[in-house]
Each structure stands twice: as structure tokens, then as C-alpha cells.
Image 1 (cartoon, helix red, strand yellow):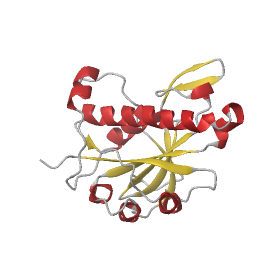
Image 2 (cartoon, rainbow, N blue to C red):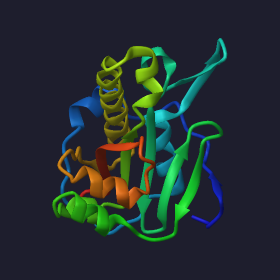
Image 3 (cartoon, rainbow, N blue to C red):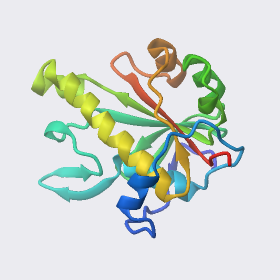
Image 4 (cartoon, rainbow, N blue to C red):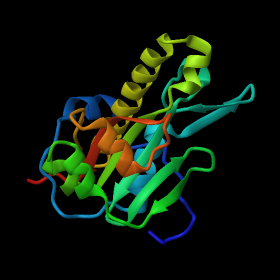
Length: 200
């Protein structure tokens, strides 16, 4: 990927040779990855599956995963050998945050899990509670976590459709992960998804 302030991602596809039922049947947690990069098209598709805009109606940009009140408290971050990026659903772009490979640091924060270090990319689901608690109070925190689950499942199934492996990771030091990603005080790491080519 070229280094720039924002990277325009490839147009996502809405059709696949892999059916939803086949993707569900084949989804497995993959912990061992080979050293092979993902294409920009694959990265584009994974991020779109998680939070991409699918339609515009009533002043709202509807996305691939449901969100309580269409408040969208979730942010997606991507770590790869090329650096740290934040996904911008509006415009389907990546914001370049750093050119440093932080996967090893994130692996350390994730209790040394090698899959976080070795996968081609780590997609990190982060939440901004204030976006949703203003309307729903403390229950908004539950809605935010439910939304993170919707997004994660979309990413896992999209990985299968692309011939890739993925792993749900919930074991990590929250504060360390937030620090590595450079998150604001009101944004927190919720879920890490290493994605790459599975070791045969």
C-alpha cells in the first residue's frame, strides 16, 4: 500500500462464488498462519464486510452490521506490516496512522498469542461508548458489544469466502492494546481478529 494520508480502497464486491451457508459451514478458528500478504482487494472486502456502507436512506448511511439507533459506536483499525490504519466507512478509505508494524506489540498485549503477530493483518474492533450511552444510558454499552459481535461475525464469514483464516481474540490487556492503537480516552479495544492464509 502506498503511504498517504488516506488510501482509497477497491470497490467491494457484493457477489461471491461461496454461498453464505458454505461460509458458515467452513468457518473455523485458525491459529497458525503462513507469511503471505493480503491483497488490497482482500483487505477492502474484509473491512467493508465489517462496517461498510450499503445504502443511504433518511439521512443515514446504512452499514453491513446493525447498530442500535444507527449510532455506530464502533471503529475498525487495521494492523499490517505496512503500518496502522483506521477504516473510514464514509468513502471506503483507510486513514494512515503509522507506518510501523505494530503486530508484535499487539501480540505482546494479547498475552503473547503468536497468531496476532503472524497473521497478515489484525483487524481490531474498538468502541466509543459515548456515542451510544447518550441515548440509551448504561444499556448502550450492551448494545455496543452486541454490535461488535455482528461486525466480527461478518469479518469471519467474509474471510472464509476469500479463502482466508481468522481467529476471534478476546484475551488481551485492554490498556496496553488501547495504547498501541493510540486510542482516545473514550475509545476502547473490544475484539482482535487476526486474518491471513492458514498454515496447511
